[in-house]
Structure formats: C-alpha cells, structure tokens
Length: 429
Ligand code: SAH
Ligand code: SF4
Ligand code: F3S
Image (cartoon, rainbow, N blue to C red; front, side, top):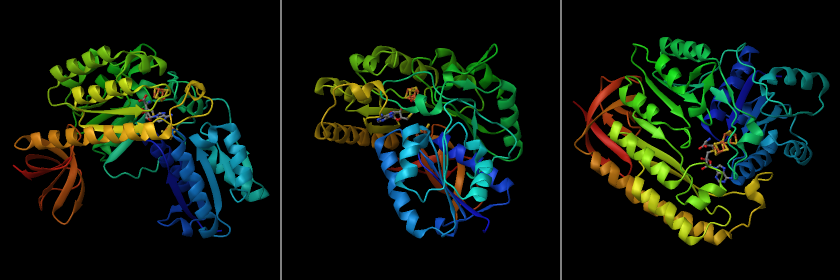
C-alpha cells in the first residue's frame, strides 16, 4: 500500500477545520496529501447533512469514486451525515465498497480504525452516541494559507426546529479560555494573519467565570492580525459585543448574524427565541457603534406553513437591513427534527420564493458595492497572481488591486475605484 491521502470536505467551515485535524492524523502516520483522488491510498469523505442536497452529493460522488479509485484504496466516510446512526448502517449496506464509516464523536480515532481495517479487511462501522472531543495529540495540518481556524466550542443547544446540527454535533462544550488564547497566540507567531473563532453559537461561550467578551478581550494582542468569529445567534448577541467590536484593534468590522426569517410567527415556529423587532434593534445599535460594519446573514424560505405574507416579511426585512452578503436557502426536511412533522409546502412555492429573494438581494449587493467607490479600505492580501492582489476588506468585501510590491499576508490600504457586482477594485494609496 502507498502513502497518499485525499480528503474531500462537504458543508461548513467547521467541517473544513475538522478535515485539517483528520489530515494531521494521517500526516503523523506518514501519509502525504495528493491532488487527485484517483491516486489516493487513503480516501476520506468528510460529510455534511444540513440539507438533503448535501447528502445527495455524497452518494453521487461515491458512485464515481467506486469506479475510479485505486483498487486497494481505503475508503472512509465520516462527518455529520454518518453520525445519523441509521444513515451509517444504510450507507455501509448500499455501498459495500466503503471500508470505514465513522461519526463525528469518534473521528479523531481515524488512525486506530485504519489499523483495524488493514488487519481484518472487514468493513468498520463505528458511530458513537456520546460527545467526546479529543483535542491535542496531533498537529493540525492547516491548509488555508494565511487563514487559521480555532474551535472555541463544539455542538449546539438551541434546537432550531428545522436543524439537524444539534443531533449530529451533540450538546454545547466550550474549550478552556487559556487553550484558545495560547492557540491564537501561537498561530499569529507562526505567521497566520487572520484567525477565525468557530462555534455554532459563539455568543454563549462560557468557561468558568469567563464569557465570550472576556475571551475576545484576552485576544487583543499587541500584534497585527485580523480576528473573526462565527456564528453569532441573534438571541444572544449583545450590545456589549458591539462595543467590543467598536473598541477592538484586531476584530474585523463584520458580523454574520443569521436571521432565518422576518416574520414573528415563523421565528417562533423555528424556535429562534427573538422577534423581528429585537433583531432590527440590535442591528441598528451595531450600525450606530460600528458605522462601516459589513453585515451578513442566513435566510431560509419555505419553512413548513410559511404563508406568502410571511415570506413577504422576510423579503421586507432583507430590504430594510440591506446585508452586504446573504446566504439564501430553501428549507430542506431533516428526519428527526420537529419541522419534519409539520405541514410542508410544495416545491414550486419554495422555488418561486427563493428566486424572488435572490433577485432582491442581487440588487442590494450591487448597490452596496457601488456605494463604496471613492472610500478607502484595508485589504488583507490572501492571493496574488502576477501583480494582481486579491483579498478581503476589514468589512469582509472581496477586493482586488494591482501592486508589484504587496505580498500575500500584507495589510494594504487602498482607495476603491470601481465595483463589479459585489467585487471591489482598488488602487494602492
Ligand atoms: N449555527 C448557525 C448555522 C448552522 S447551519 C446558526 O445558528 O446560524 C447554517 C445555515 O444552514 C443556517 O443558518 C440555516 O440558514 C441553514 N439551515 C439549517 N438547517 C436547514 C434546513 N433544514 N434546510 C435549509 N437550510 C437549513
Ligand atoms: Fe442549527 Fe439553530 Fe444550532 Fe444554528 S443555532 S446550529 S441553526 S440548531
Ligand atoms: Fe457543518 Fe453540515 Fe455538520 S453545516 S456542522 S458539516 S451538518
């Protein structure tokens, strides 16, 4: 058997970071990464199940992998999708050429399971139903240039009625504050320029007597770097946090605050625990404290029983807030969640609503970008081809400019000269 590995990641940023940990395990065992899955001796699919389309993709890829992988490659499926017990069993049966199936709570033992498989050559299906996060031990194999991700917590306690995440990621567990602070400090010292703190609901971070604001304060190092966090939950987002952003020397001027819907009855049915008015008040307060803040959000259309008028409330909220960036989803039924048992809308209605929402947001994004022309921004360069530099502004907009001297990892102040849809173009001052 050769020593090449290939990992394919589905789903969110947290999963991308989980894959970096899995890569760390494989590297510590002497494997090296390869570019093409057809060359891999160890092939890992780190899956997502937040929407049905995520699962359909995995099955589609498995069909292709079956015929194109190396004959004796070890094929491993792990992640959120396989944390659903019956899904793991179904997948192992439907795809007998999959060698190892793991859930989210035991995937840090990947190396041990590979050993077992190589000894027995029998399919290994191991899904635990208890949370257990095994931190440390292996070096994380970070793969994202100047960006590094740091978990501050795992799991979620919110049980939004549409969402499967709490079932496949378990209850909320926070990492010790000092561990997070040390990780971030080490990452900056080894050259990372942008650190993103990860958690399903970072605002509820608590370790002993310390909360999320305390953690952010402890990360105000006297070093040049950019600090971000995701995701904030509107019910727990506080004005104190907005003040922290305003005062901070390191925090990006951006906030991802998923609203999901703009109608109070729907928000209640989703178990979101805030109203439209609560949300708008918080956004208005943040904007007053941090005038150039870039706002982004997740919105869902076609939640069970959502009426046309209720959808209009989402549309009007989006038009009222004017997000810099909006992630828009059609509600997807997830088995085992309360919303799955509610009365469902038909496909056409859902499709029609998302089309209208996308159209409305497209105009807003374009207008916001156009309004930036003439202003200045600080860009963190993350890519360079020839003399063309690409990066993000402090308020999280994509920007490009030409400069021979700038390098990846530099913070460069530019004047914005043009906008193409959501993308800004600048020149060095
Ligand atoms: N913890 C984060 C996001 C988790 S999932 C939060 O609370 O915002 C990312 C996004 O996927 C959610 O914000 C939601 O908009 C969307 N999502 C979750 N479950 C979904 C479902 N069943 N169908 C469609 N979209 C869903
Ligand atoms: Fe899912 Fe809600 Fe938890 Fe986010 S807060 S992960 S949407 S249950
Ligand atoms: Fe992320 Fe998908 Fe799991 S969104 S937490 S990988 S279900």
